[in-house]
Image (cartoon, rainbow, N blue to C red; front, side):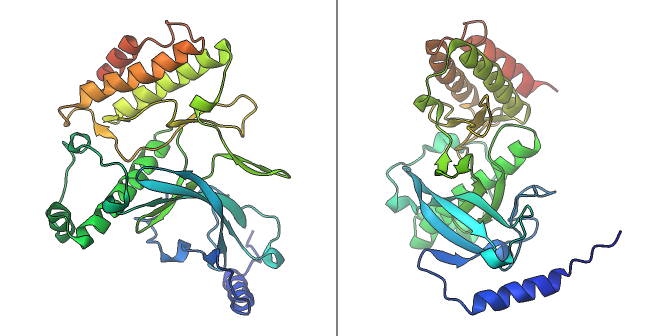
Length: 299
């Protein structure tokens, strides 16, 4: 049956309505129209909650986390209230992760992380190597782009990560993992902030082992896996782990340090899980590492 919805007329009405109102200082027009349809947007088909309307407005709601190389902000993307019908894709909460130029960060990643990555001899690469102002900004954009592309690749493979919505410059927008009710938006806690019982710790161990193996099957190692980089998805009655912060992923085979980073990841997360009551049989770092290596080197 043909839909009676006139998208062009709807967008025209939205833009006309919004053009009559001034945006507040904490608002901007949605940056979705600025993104290239395939290169700068998340995996398709888009989830139904993704707001694709040109007339939507982005409203900054506050900072979620200040990091060593990027800051995460809570963002609402929504049509004006008068234009909403209650259908999916009219309003949503997002995380805006904004990378800073290297001279403004308090952390500089070791080159060991990027060994084995394929790079192009472009103007940007040469500027980054020389450390010019343009190069420093380009470096921030590269880290943002890497995280966006890795999140898309992991999400398509079924690894529990936030859905990457879009990227514009050094700003990556992704799915907000947390709750939003009458008490307001609350981000999901990091595992380090939780105190799971033994049964939950064992369940998390088995799910995280599966995720480590999924990464290995893609030829990847997280490179910084810890209870600080895994969320407990509070949207679920029994929260499952969601892996975050992936710009530093390691090429398991091409990077000469791949095996070392894999062992460190497994040891770090398994140590924490065992401290929470997970049995050694479920959180054995040597077994995880061996299984991941087999998965990553399987022909």
